[in-house]
Amino acid sequence: MRLIRSASLIAVCGALIAAEGLAPETEVIDNKQISVSPKKELTFNVPADVTVATRELWYRSFDGKAWGAWQKHSITFAKDTPITWAPPEGHWQVYLRKILTSGLAPEVPGEATKPSGEFIIDRTAPAVAIGFPASKAKLRGGDRYTVKWDAQDSHLRTSPVNILWSVDGKGTFAPVATGIANNGSFEWNVPKDMTTAGVLKIEAADKATNVGSAEVTAILVDSIKPKGKVVGPAIVASQTVKLDLDIKDEGPAGLASAQLWISQDDGVSWTQGPFIQDPRSVEWKAPSDGKFRLAIVASDASGNTSPIPKGKADDQFVITVDTAAPVILLTSAIGIIPGDKPAPTPQRAFKPGDNVQVQFAIKDINLAPNTVSVFFQADASKPWQELAVGQSSDTAYRFALSAVPTTAARIRVTAIDQAGNTGEAIAGETFEIQTAVQDDKVEINLAP
Image (cartoon, rainbow, N blue to C red; front, side):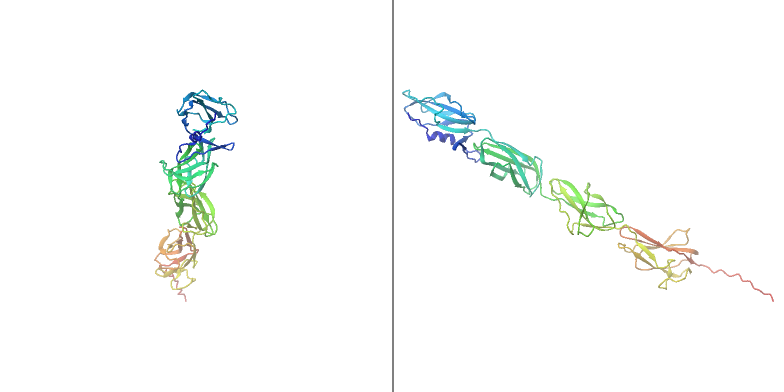
């Protein structure tokens, strides 16, 4: 008898319904193309044959090393009745044994029996795990990261992996990569669209069109670099300075760190300073007096970092550290000279109403304008009397002496620089203001 191994039987085993746009793939075993199916029940349609009384379904499974013994289906199928079977998962061969109306039938299948068809039933989706990123990861928008995963299945497709991204986590996914090899990693350029609810999904499909997936949720993407700058003070009189700062992070990741950078040579070179705990202020100790350029390098929790300073830039701040008081030099040892004289004279005694001038020279690179004050002291037991404030530093102060009788008058001059340092000069010698003339007692010698 001729055993019918119809093409329709094999076609039924391979005619699988595609899932999510996938078509089944065959498994190559011993140079044979084996169909892989997720179906729960198979139907073997056989041609009508008036000579057939019944049919038997026999099957056996492969355990990866050897084929098992043939087993008979518990149902004997009448002629022209579709043969159905719900096989468990596994690698199967089937054999259809016909019993003719005359009672003639082939021998029950044995080791040498050629099967009517062979196929694999696989209903288990691949197992997928994502190694990177993790849930709640904080990523930099626009940067490249290596996505890592592990996908396991006995019958993975040739290019089984899809990587999908949802910016809002609401189920709408855009493809990052589709139909890629299961090599466990992929270089992903993260979109710049910012979010705190991103979802990365990785799918893996097997040859039976089963799809397994894994997701990482609550991914934060931050595309904005934080900004920071020093805003004051512009000049200080102490090398220990409390700097005023303005540090902002407009992205969702939040500020992670900030550090002060300093240049002592007007931007030619830069060094790192203290880390900043309070985005509004930081204490810094200048190494010396002078002018310094200051910049802020800030990083957020996603790793966005503001640029490291190079050269000069508009967002840098220039501070002057000046701890030296102005140096004041008096032209005259007594502090004053006659108003009509260009230089000191030997004169040490004056009368009320005399016009005099206080000549001085002030040395300071940061001298504030119009901060010179002039004081007069009648004698060491008297308080200083303010003669003038807000005077120019390059003009002598002129005044008329008051009628204060004294033999120990003294002059003091002060000046203030922009840092608030006050310098002073006190005349080293005193002068006299004479307010009356004492009559001499004269003895007249009338002796002859």
